[in-house]
Length: 179
Ligand code: IMP
Ligand code: MG
Image (tube, rainbow, N blue to C red; front, side, top):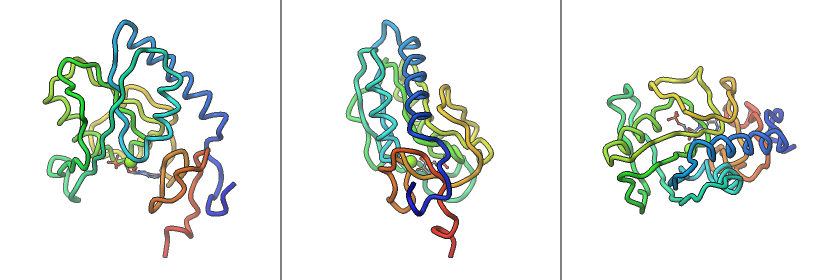
């Protein structure tokens, strides 16, 4: 285990098993369709790569980088699109792949924006869900694991851009981000 980790929360084996289960559910959902699977950069990259490799549906992929700006209420927070899709999603079945839903603000605003482009369907799959921290009314259709309100790293998730390549999800030691 990494010395900055407090404890491993979700092991490589647990992740692998759950990713396969999610891929099977998504294959069933998209049977007869060709979904556009969207990786939300950068945190989702590892989960996305494992998830799509386990899906048998004839998918296409695209990438997006977003963040939300401002500390006001959900409705006043602005979505910053740092990198947009290159695919026209009108009439497409879109699956958004996220690493973690925390306050939900980013995803709430992203979903609202993408819906204006008239996709045939829009679903969200997140590896992790921290429901205790939710501010925006958003509920992912598919989730890997529900976790407590703790700061986690690894399997794509970072703290100050570090730890994304850890193969497991771990709780970060408080001493790393406090003081
Ligand atoms: P929110 O749902 O708009 O609050 O933002 C979610 C984003 O915050 C995620 O995509 C992550 O980049 C980041 N985030 C939230 N919680 C954690 C965590 O525990 N570890 C690492 N990143 C996190
Ligand atoms: Mg992120």
